[in-house]
Length: 109
Image 1: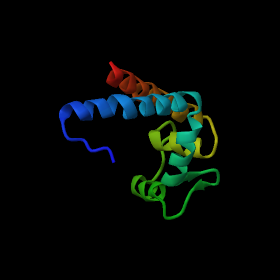
Image 2: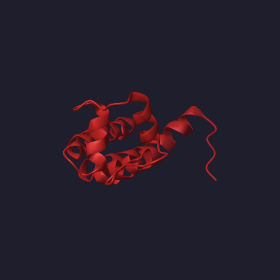
Image 3: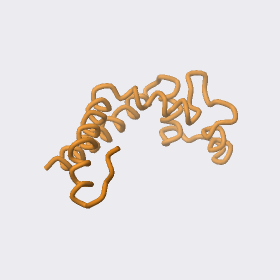
Image 4: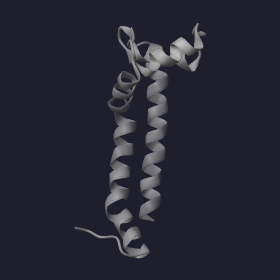
């Protein structure tokens, strides 16, 4: 087992293993954002049939009452149903993928 005993070993571990993983994960997020957005929306409770009963989304919805058009909640609801909001959510995931990849690249420097 690889034991991290010193700061230099930690840095080497980061450069050798974690940085390439971050670059690959970030690239995957940019190329296919739905691999992150779809499951994340489903776990939160935003689905094709609307908000799932007993989910986090249902709890937030009951707390805010009426959903204002164009709000973040409305966008997530639209994304979960495969509507126009999905383009927005995918764009956010792609931007996050760029940041994750950049972090991996920076760690290799």
